[in-house]
Image (cartoon, rainbow, N blue to C red):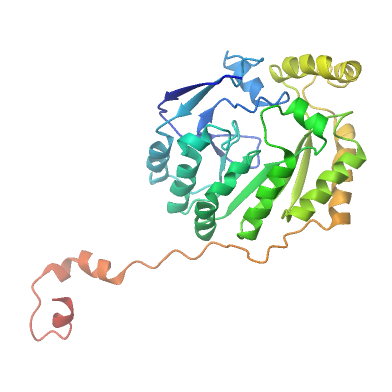
Length: 320
């Protein structure tokens, strides 16, 4: 599929979000070439009156100045150094990143500001940036989540057509963990009647454990307008026998009721205990204390030091 990349400047970098595990998001690109059939961003596109069907992902906006804009925003006195999530509405390691290197620049800017950051991705390209992630983890809380909802080849290839194979993502996770970076697995979204089978859930959790994932979490598919139409259209093509079930389960709502979600979460929690998912890093990178202000710089800025020193003052020769 041919993708059109539009190089456009942005006026702001950080986006305030609500209802998520983080308060701010940061997206170097608008649109995603991965073209996952279940992508929740399609709902945002529909609300913005942009294509949410098969055209989504064919045109990617590249925010060419996003790193410079972020640095200005991080330098504002009112900025409180809250957690920033890179990739909430795009994949920061989709193919375009290989050329533009914007995600790498964002990590560097956040590290320089000692600002906590998290990344969510399906892109193994993240291992290119191990060096800057290590530096970021030494300065502020840093984590990477790899989205791996299933290892089943048919389900993956059909629902995530533009992504790297799941096991390739897990190999990338292992590289990050070996470097001391907190890297976990997000099993999302789980697709009812497809990837929710117990043996498929177990395959992911066991593989995550073998890769060294520090933790694991899961969530079930939700279908807002924009995502719903596209997903059901693809479901009718690929698994038509499941369409009546989805139309019944998601009738008049985007989210499944708790009674239908909890069994999946309990199953994954039990598997997590069974396979021993835990932070087993040999090296755990932790933020170092901020360096003390340089004494010589303080002296240079002290008003009295600017006065000519008297020769009988004991420190005169040291300052001269």
